[in-house]
Length: 181
Image 1 (cartoon, rainbow, N blue to C red):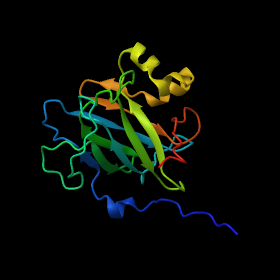
Image 2 (cartoon, rainbow, N blue to C red):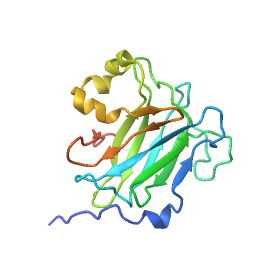
Image 3 (cartoon, rainbow, N blue to C red):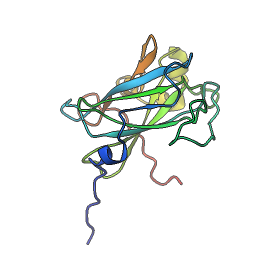
């Protein structure tokens, strides 16, 4: 007889005591703030979610430097982790990623852990920009326009806003990596 798996939270306040992760110091001349809200199916904030991001550097190179958990203040590792606050808000200080491959639009890979989920969810926060580049991206071009819009961050003067809706109206597109090693 199979039994249901345990959910992945809400225990993150024990493992992630800080509210924001700085992949680069906020004073870095090229720093941008990636931030947004994690919302449930009714549009209510999820105050106990944890997010991880992975991204290439501004030149599109996948970074292989260590030190993601104990930052030294100058090595960009391309990885960060944070939790949402009581309003469901999260924030990362990072750099704008470059395209990791020709014909691809630049994006930040996002993993979401939250209460009620039996496994993590994977999505992408694409940088807003040239509509032709976004339309030519292999993943984005395979989605209906209204679904595609859930993966494109909104540009701000010094940052990117990217809300994640776990279900319901305007649910964020999530990726399925089952079967991949």
